[in-house]
Amino acid sequence: MSTSSDQHRERAAEVMRVITCAIVTASDTRTPETDTSGQTIRQLLEAAGHQVVAYHVVKDEADLMAKLLDDLTGVEHPPRLILFNGGTGIAPRDRTYDAINGKLEKTLPGFGELFRMLSYQQVGAAAMLSRATAGVYRGCVVISMPGSVDAVTLAMSKLILPEIQHLAWEVAGKI
Image (cartoon, rainbow, N blue to C red):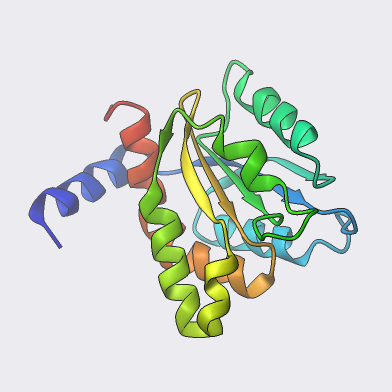
């Protein structure tokens, strides 16, 4: 790793100790009681010392997710990270990518690329079916990952949690 990245991570950890996060599960069938992926994300965030300030289960409808994204980012103190899970595949009902990607002001293509690379090691060529994506919208980091427990665990443990403070710090303008 580069010295610059290490320095950024160290500085970010100093000033961005607790990151506020929102979790959104896109599903036509899950409820808060049956949302094991959303619960996994919450547990991993809280175990790492971060705060979940909003949690929603929303139908996999592009307009509903787009409105929720606007609502979450349109408040005085929005969460620093908004984590979507579910609806990233290519089935007709998978609409999360379509709802989010067009709104992103800056994209982080590396997230989807790295997620698919890591996922390939677990599920093989089926990893290409994922439209996991990330970027910045209205000063918030927005990340969208598949909705299985294995997928969210992989994304959280290998990509999101190791960089969560760094991501928030960069978007906040390196305060």
